[in-house]
Amino acid sequence: MTDGLKTNYIFITKGLNLWYGEDQALYNIDFSITENQVTAIIGPSGCGKSTYLKTLNRMIELIPSVRTSGEILYREKNIFDIKEEELRTHVGMVFQKPNPFPKSIYDNVAYGPRIHGIRDKKTLDKIVEKSLRGAAIWDEVKDRLNENAYGLSGGQQQRLCIARCLAIEPDVILMDEPTSALDPISTLKVEELVQELKKEYSIIIVTHNMQQAARISDKTAFFLSGEIIEFDNTARIFSNPSDKRTEDYITGRFG
Image (cartoon, rainbow, N blue to C red):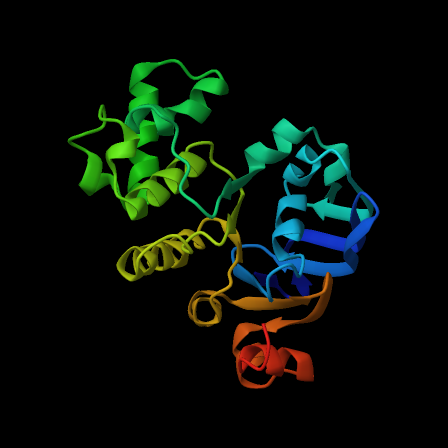
């Protein structure tokens, strides 16, 4: 969002380098992400896009050999100075494959609020309904909240995982190829949901599907070999990229 000349950035990445052991995966990433927009990250497999996404909530640090230099600011605070648990409360994540817990639909959504100390049944009921509504799945599951989440279809499971993410009231939602395991109809529902969610959340989505990036994002970053080659408004990236490598990737000459 723009207020006069001031842009509200949710993340500012400055000179980020990342290594897995001796192998460097990200090179000098400089990148500012605007709040309440959908920012897509595209690029061929192994280009660093998922690595970068997982750095934003420090999940990448679960890999023991990882080290970084540079900084990432989340709302002007260095994320490496924020406790991981606190950061992940603000910065939620939805993964490539739906990963519901082996619990009831209700307990999946109530899990995060309970961890944060909410025990009152009426309060939990409200959070569960609001989150399932927010993930556009309430009407499909409201009569089966006590059933195991594994009984849902793949597309429903992914929307349940989005509801579980919404239940902790994050500021940002990271999505790592959230529709790659879904059929076209479920994919469309998730894409429609992303468009709705950006009214309240900032969304950063890694996708291998360029048509998807073109359909749902406001801005697009093209990663190649661990570097950002180009970052611009999505319409510009797809219609008039400034770098030939971006054009070659988008037109299918490689990747």
